[in-house]
Length: 238
Image 1 (cartoon, rainbow, N blue to C red):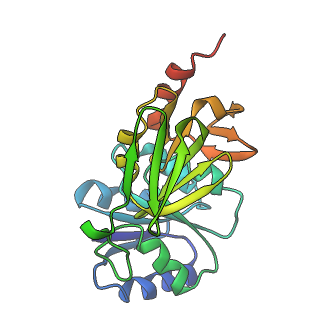
Image 2: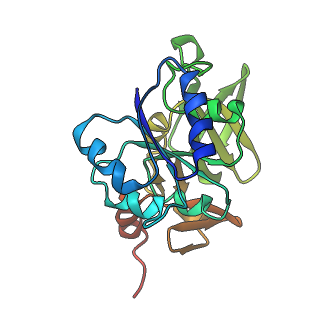
C-alpha cells in the first residue's frame, strides 16, 4: 500500500519513516512538512494511507482532511489527546496515535488497515460467529456457549478490525464478526448505523451534541456520511 507522511516535526518524521520501513506491505511515497506540499501527490498518485499530524502550520490536519474529496485512509498523529473525539467525525480516520508512540502501538494501527498485514487477525470460515435470530431475540455463540439476547436490550454494536462488541443493558460480548453482518441481523427500525464502526439503538440515545451521541454517559461519534440519516430517523422537533 502506498503511504505518505504529513508531519512538520523532523524527529516524528524519522520515527514514522523507520516504522514504515519495517512493514514490507507499505511503500512510502513521500514525506511532507505541510499539507499544501502534499496536495499534489494526492491528486497525482494512488495513496492508500496517510499519516497526518493534527497540529500543522497554516492549516490543521483535520481542516486539511475536510478539503479532500476522496481522502485515503488516515492515521492521525499528535502530541495532544484533545482531538481524539473530534477526529472520529471522519469515517476515513482509522486510528489516532499520541506521540511518542512505540512500534508496537504503531503496528496496532497498521493492523487495522488490512487483514493481510503483519499480525492482523483474519476471519476464516471456521471462525465466523454463529448467530441465530428471530423477531425479538438473538442467540450469540461465544466460546461454545449460546447467549440469548433480547434485541430491545442491545444498546450498541461496535466493530474493531475483525471483531464486534455487542453491548446490552446487562452484558457485553466480543467476538469475531463484521458490522455488515450485524446490519442484517438487526432489522428492527430502532437500530441505525451512525458511524463506520457503530450501530446504535435509537431508544437508548440520551442526547446528541454536535457530532456526538450520548448513551449511558458514553460518547459515540457520528460519521459525517451518516448524520443526515440519523436525523431523518429520529425526526427532531424544531
